[in-house]
Amino acid sequence: MKKKILVLSLILLFFTVAVGGTLAYFNAEDEAHNVITSGGIDIDLQEWADEDMTIPYDEAHPEGFVEVMPGTKVGKVVVVENLEQPAWIRADYTITIEKDGKILDIDASELAKIVKIQEGAGWVEKDGMYYYDEAVETGAKTEPLFTVVEFDGVSMGNEYQNCTFTIDVYAEAVQAANNPEKLGWDQGKLPPVQEIK
Image (cartoon, rainbow, N blue to C red; front, side, top):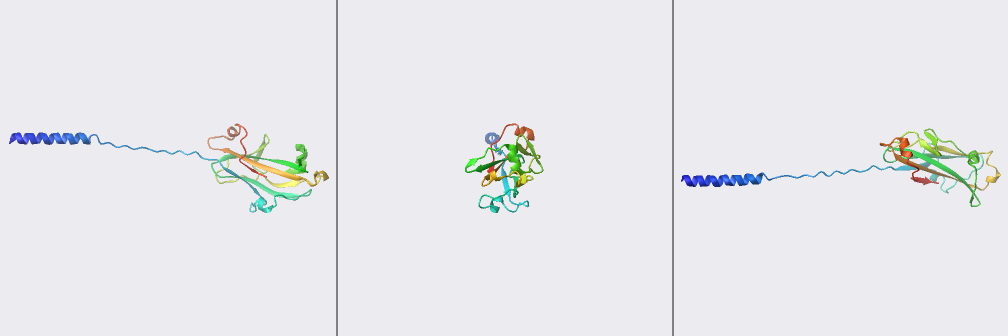
């Protein structure tokens, strides 16, 4: 009887060791899946016909042009809205005068006498571009680049009859995060983000 109990005890001990050994190999695994996304830069160049910015310029002039005479002032409010990450913004505009299908070659100083545009507060002219003087937060707009285009009554003589004046405006943005203003723009001219004629 003692032999049977001893054998049974050894079998139970072996079974316990076997089970215990199996349990010792249980393990678990887990994996962390980290997604990192890059932020985007996106701006919207807007033109309004009124200073309250309630009438889009295109709606105010659906024919695509405005007839002017010397001395005429045309409301043209240009702002840039930042749609994504905080950004530094700069803008520029060009004026061309066309007559009989040909672009007139007019000196810049003469052109500035004929078509007068006063840049708005918050914009600083440097190297032929206009830089907004602070980073623009997400969802915010710049102050107007300009609000009025004036066709001078004295300088705009008969030679400008039946001419087409085109003002092209464009804006560019570069991220503000981890990027001081000067560093961002020193990398060279960026391609236009959006162009409005």
